Each structure stands twice: as C-alpha cells, then as structure tokens.
Image (cartoon, rainbow, N blue to C red):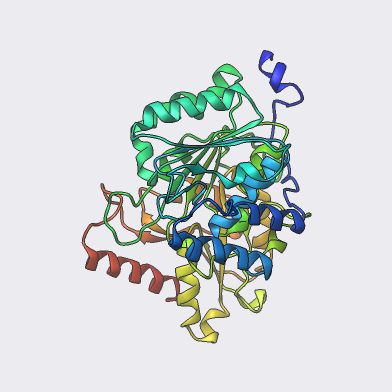
Length: 426
C-alpha cells in the first residue's frame, strides 16, 4: 500500500494483535524527565499554589522513590517519548492545565504572562510537544487531529475532551474516519482520545464518555471459545485504573511498528486517589501494559466461588467494600479488572479463569446503566470463555435513557445497592 511509503516506511499493516511490547524506561531517565517536567528558570514566576501543590510534591515523590500519581505518570510517558525523538500534540479544551487542574503542562509567568512548556526543555535533541488549548468545537478540532494522525507516524496526536461526553458533537469523525479509516482507505492513525469518565453523583451530564458507542464500532469476534481466535481490531478501547497503565498505553502507541487509534475512558476521581498510584518500578525496563489486572485480594484461589469482573474506578469502591466484609465471605470472592476492552483480552482472561477451579458464579459489575458501559460488549465474549456453560450475571444500574439519575439520594442508593449485591448471596 502507498500508505507505508515516505514517512510511513518501516511500519507494517498488522493482520492480528501483536504481543505487548516492552514499554518500560530506565528509572534514572524517568526521574530526569519527571524533574524536567516541572523545572523553570528562576526568573520565571510560577503561581505560588502551583509551586506548593504541584511542583514540590512531584519533585519529592521522584527524589524519594515514592508512589506517583496519574499526572506524573502521563508526564513521564510524554517526556520519555520526546527524549526518544517523537513529537507530541496535545489538544483540547484547557488541556494545558487539565480539566481537573492536574496536568499543568504549561506554566504562565505571574509577572509577564509568558507561557513556558517545561517538557520542551529536556534535552537539545528531543522531539517537541505542542500544547493547544482549543475552543469548544469538537467536530472541527477532532477532525483536525485525525488529519495530523494520518500525516505522520512520528507524532503522537492526543485529543482530550474536557469531559468524556463532549465527544458527542464529534461523533461523525469517530464513525467515518477514526473507526473505519484503515478499513476503507488503508490509512493508519495513532490518534488518542482521552475521555474523562466516571459516575460521581454529579448528574447525567459529564458523567459518561459513552464508551458503549465506541465498543459497538469495534470489529473483534464475539465467540472467544477457541484459543486460535484472531483479532485485528480497528481501534483499541481501554479503561486503565493505575498511573502505570496509562504510561504504558501512551508509550505503546509509538513503540509499536504500526498505528491504531486508542480510546481511553480516563479518570476523574482517580487522578488524586491515594490508592490509585504506581511506583517507578511499574514503569521500569521489562514492564508493559496489562490488558487485565489479576485478582490480588483472595488468599486462596481454591476457596473462590464467585469471580467479579469490573472495569474502571468502580474497582476501588469494591476494594473498600471488600475490606468491610468478613474474611469468611471475602475468601470466596475474586475481583478481576479488565483494563483493555478491545481487543478483547481473551488469552489473559482464560488464564485468569484457570486460577479458580471451584467457581460457581461469574459476575460483571459496572456503575453504568445496563444499556451503557461495557456490559453488552463483554457479556457474550466472557460467556463464551466460561466453563460448564455458565452464564455471566449482571450487577449494575437498570437500563435508563439518560446516563444516570440526577437525583443525589437515588444515585447514592443505587451505588450502595451495587456494592452490597456483589457481596451477598454467596
């Protein structure tokens, strides 16, 4: 194909999903990049609150080898790619600061109003990151970023929605170009869509990135019972739950010898959740993205009678509820996270299921409504893997026209019921 000429020479047209590449980076490099991501000239006056709550804590965590948060892991991914010579374009509403004031990829001098991007000052031979705070015209902006993605494989183009549901007004770009451009025109795209997603009790708007719409566009097989199933997905859809996972996802986009769009149902509350942190060891050489995160709570796999599959931030709510149960009950439950929904993690999930020989019930748990979220996508695929013709039970919200209720008391009651139901009837 002429697509793989010029700038695209050296890349391949994949016929199936490749093994996870090693996307780890030397810890010395990570520390250097992390420090550089917040360093400015002494004459540049950063806002005192950023110095106290952003710059100093990041430097401390890196210097003392402490657990790092989401924004730091993202900066490490960006900086390490820049150091390798790749270029990055980060675009979206208020992306420089970040919707939740977590990123601060650009600083503004409080005296001169000059803008400084620390990640562009790692080394003299590095690539360049362009931080573009765009206007609220998602159709035009996402269309432009898709154009950037097919122009060169050496640029990591990222569009971040201010909230996940802002992608609604750009749906035609997703349908016509991002999800099907490779199939129709043999044009690969490494575009990343970061879509903040999560039900936090704030009402129906800005809660859901409508992940179900992206999954409906995915072309992976439904029957996963054969161990020879071939998947060559038109795009990747992920719901990562740790900083290390987003680090590896972003680096994987460029390290592989082909390009695929990546849809990330990103975090909101996890950005600052103390439980949702990673160590530099999780990003060191020899590490890579994990499509599933195995159960780490159950003490004996032989005693487990219920396996609960979950994706996204609800995992941390389940862990908190798990800690409040009796050991007699928790010994019988295993909680498995699906971090990447498409391509479906068939082999990893099959291996995980083999760990628990005495399971009587398999559950998919989600905070979204039944007609939303990942359930309708994962249900037939997981079920095709279950032994003894077991059915996959659903625990979550009932079908609803809106993403979620706007009544606070109802929302809390629904959330409480979901958590309680996971730990009852065993």
